[in-house]
Length: 275
Image 1 (cartoon, rainbow, N blue to C red):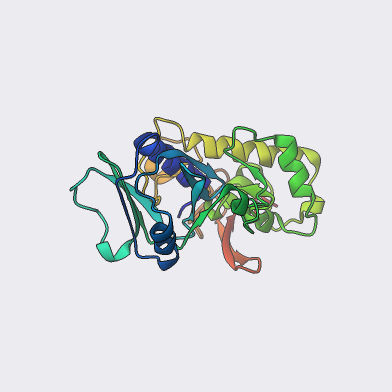
Image 2: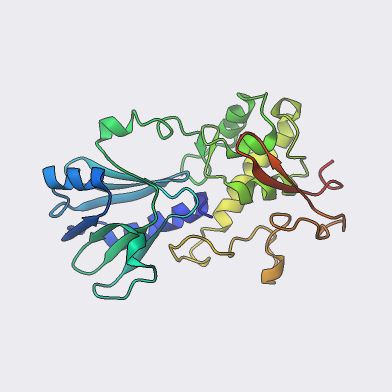
């Protein structure tokens, strides 16, 4: 599932493939994007930048036009050479942005919008993002301050709240709590400064480790390559996520799983290591 690391790598790859190149082809099945293209064509514009912000991605075109996308659970971006066979069905295509040498194709992207700089600054859900865990300006102290602003939330809920920390998804949520020996059902108000700082620092470490240039750089949705344990064996790549009933890698206690929060997202933890 796409989390901040997936989107960061996708933006990095798209930027390398498209930046400073003129758009020669634009195709979409989304009526609200097609209307913009009809009124102010995308073809002829230059791709100026592609950047990630938590789980959001923005692609900036010349003439102050920005394509904002969010993958939610199933979306992905692919790049192809012109004429190369797509790895997904055409019925799954939502957007095609083509240059003379590259086609970028968005499949099953559930959120895709055109904005100007002004309208993007007003976009709910984007204009109030918290500390971007993979952002160049990430601050551990800032992340702690953001978390402390919601003392009423359980840790597992707080880590998924993008207005507090941007980029953490369900996998990293459980992995972070385990790595910091914190029970995901504790309220933020019960966590001390050292615990909060450890969570912020570990979040940055985990996500950065999964976007290094020598990590998997494909731009499709993750299918099982994310790692947090640092172990070479691919079967040992995660501490607790997806391992309900299996022995904890540290103490042997069976890992537990339970749905958490209003969204009923599953949380995994060790009842011994994370008392």
